[in-house]
Amino acid sequence: MQSRIVQAQWTDDRTAGPESRVRAAGVAMAAGAVVFAAAGYVADAPPGTIGYLVSNAAGLAAVACVLVGMNAFVRGESLGRLGSWGTGLIRIGLVATIVGYLVNLIGPALPEAAEGIVAIAGIPAWSLAHLMYAGATVLGLACLRAGSVPRIVAVPLAAGLPVLLIGVGLGLALGEPSAPVLTWAATEGQAGLAWLLVGLRLSARG
Image (cartoon, rainbow, N blue to C red; front, side):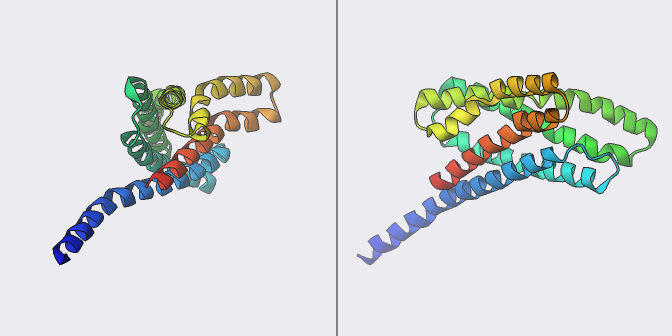
């Protein structure tokens, strides 16, 4: 009897590790989502200011947390080939965003000539960053098709690219003073909300 109790306890300890890691990844992703959205809201601070430094450093840390959480999320769901494509696009977009933030942080500290070269390198990075919205839509559709993910998580993901296109278009059409808020809501705002819900899903699953 004692050996059975010890064996059961050993089994529980062995399975508790992955569950706690999933839960930690969910908490990190949820926190990263909120920080990413907040950093995007103040991203217009001029280079060289404290606001610029803080927003880019916070955004960099937040996206790294989201990337960790996204990897944990897709490992625990059966989303098929469509989900793999969506995840791949999201990963490319998130890594490109990390590169973009690094360029923003490193560039101003370099000599003027080197800063210009680094700034040019940041152009494709920020362009590729938008793939995370396309990937979110593909992943969201995969979640809806699989039916294993709550709709409250899948629908905001699936809305990623349409919301981006419509919101940014409206912002350009309406101009000031609505444009900055609409553009933020269609980019960092909606991405932060979708990632927050994924992080909460991870925490519950863990």
